[in-house]
Image 1 (tube, helix red, strand yellow):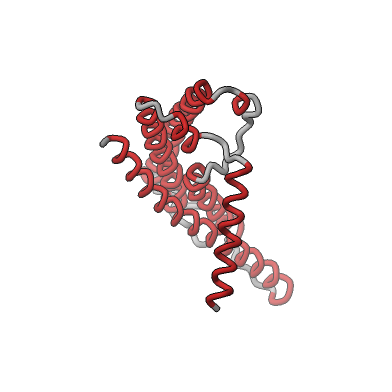
Image 2 (cartoon, one colour):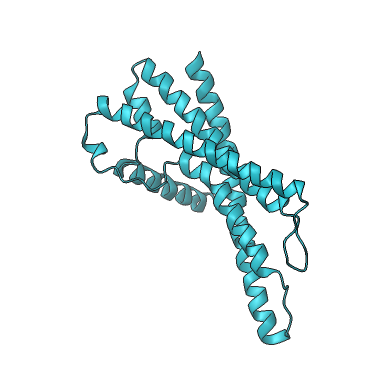
Length: 203
């Protein structure tokens, strides 16, 4: 019962993380458009937004924070685990869980620090120094929200891994927390190729 509930919550958070990741991607597109406009505007029209540096900085921070949870969900983060992956699965599952627990602790600290910064900016009514004087709580709030979602997802992921460990599902722990294998990469590539092929056939 508990395991099923945790899996359901994890899938729901994965959907949220996927949507946030798409938003992050569009944020990077907007960032590139702003830079392009500013460069061409200065070169040929003698005009500038006068806020490109600030806005692109906010968009980059927003994009990174909003992509964190999806990266964790897809196990696409960088890991140096040459030694760990050579260990037996029975031992490896405990190391995966220990790493996940440490990640939750780190993210808890980062989330607290991020929202403390937002609270401080709100308290002092802080604005940036650009011509549009953006209230700092807006970009900082989005940035802190992205970190908080990753912290929440990591917490649920760790709890589900603990539940699977309790019932002896070592393979399930490996699927949740282990590194992506070559088989995983190949399967994803084949699925992507199949999707594209199916789309062409439909057209």
